[in-house]
Length: 220
Image (tube, rainbow, N blue to C red; front, side, top):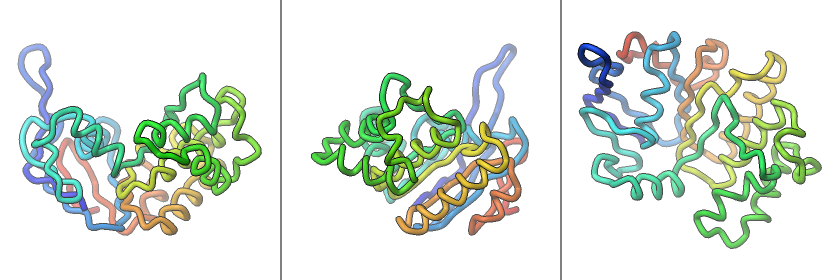
């Protein structure tokens, strides 16, 4: 489902360049759950952004479901994300002017789904927020906002779900409930899950763990 070869990412800095990723090779099978762990600044989120087509590598190649990202322009990568990829972020990334239902509907509407409201409502019900569908993000707790984000991610029925520190802004008890929900939905949907986290307990729930150290990746 995901293949990366000789992946490098460099960024310009004063006096030269900084190499964030140093020749990453990676293969993730369809339906696998994979955790990428490592210290802050090790390159985990950079790698996730490249795999999702949110940024471009300096060198190397990435294939998602057999599609080479480097052969797509920005519009092509955006279309691929809309069709194939879901996201769950640490900061929730909900639009404050939209209700919970409208936040879940938005990506469905953008891709032309004729039953965006119905599908969004069903997924809010699956995450236990049917009665909160008309509330705005400011009216929801952190855990509720992340449940909306999970509903939004799964409602589009992605083949791949990328999660970047999904419990990072939540207390321990709320974070555990969110993780239970994330993995339960993932099992039901058969999605390929790539999870970036510094939480070893969360990583242990995945099929595989990969450790990022100073831009290099190895099996943990």
